[in-house]
Figure 1 (cartoon, rainbow, N blue to C red):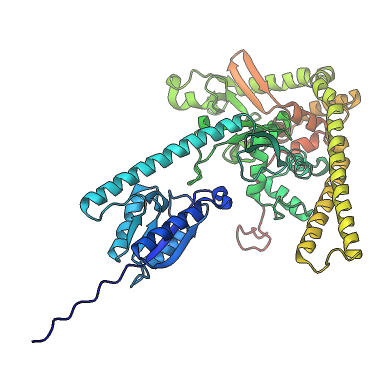
Figure 2 (figure 1 turned 90 degrees about the vertical axis):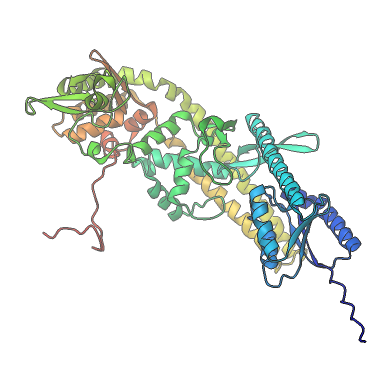
Length: 556
């Protein structure tokens, strides 16, 4: 009778070790990952499991699957046959901190014969063990969300106190150590002279253009910066989006906003969730506001083309003082009478707004009379400009200090270059060393950029705000009055918009005219007088395509 053969013992499962820490700081400290590896290898040795591969994830969160080592491990675990049968982790939170995604990947791996094992949270594969694991995953997810909430609260308080939470600082600033608190170094932002000059130049171009030629749009500014070899912080070229972001960033008036977007989706958060962090201001509030108004007027959503090319004198700048909506044209008696009427009341009646209607000729005459006899009085203009004139010396002094900082930085970079050249001449340094070549190129770039910015800043000092003499104010007032009486209604309308940016009808007997001192000063001091101020108002006239590929020019 033949003996029955004894079946061979089942092969021991091979294991893949997955090691992860959440932050780059933990990975750099070299504590958690080696400790995880030691414990996982000891566990495999006790079980007799051969180790197939180790997957190390330094500095990645477990709340999503955007992890390179994790994805390589999953791809390997889903191949047929898999190179390992167990994924070994220190705790289930190392694999995932999201219960849904944990179960999603666990089931995909289980279909291919790969299971997930934790050395500190051992559970079975029966229904009770699966339920216990799912409960652990839910607690891990809850703890992760709580940790994120407490961390964000601490970072918001850190920002309120004026300390920097990390990431790249805005152009014009650099990060410096502020104080030591225990083993942590608190950091703040300080002005970077080279970047600050670039930011100020962008705002000057948006407000005054090149040598007072008139406001420039974001595309024209980007083209100018690229043509003049003024690069971004990373040495790249400027784009429309980058320039627009620079012009609208409140950091440059000393109010850096932290916690404005969701980290993952980059969606905008509620305004109440943002924290204003105080930083050194690069641009004064009046200049910033003037640039925002200029950009708004160029935005078709803010002022449609029908208002820019409209024959209505106050079209696009006349608003109801009750609801804030625009005053639009209404006619009566077959067009014999023309009125400014609140658009809300015109559409919805008194239930929408109690706004009023006023005769167009009467309101136009009232606004022009006020501008001629009150605003354009030379004595009144001088009084309005006193504050700006008093600040002229302070501005110039600050700009001179800024030029000094730029030249100091250029000198320091040049001295370091000279020391490097001397070390090469004396045979101390190897001229073929790649690191040395990179350092020389970096110092040369810093020196050239600082020298160029210093020259531009020095040349622009006298253009920050010109001297307003009584004769200049008188000539401006006379020229503006003549333009107001001009038969060219479109030119007169553009001039009014350059001097008064908003007209509010509060009541039949009260009209509020709003403007900006900065824009009025720019209008007075423009190289071409009131002409350049009027021509600076953007239009919507289409240009013909030069290549005749679209928007074809009509044949004569």
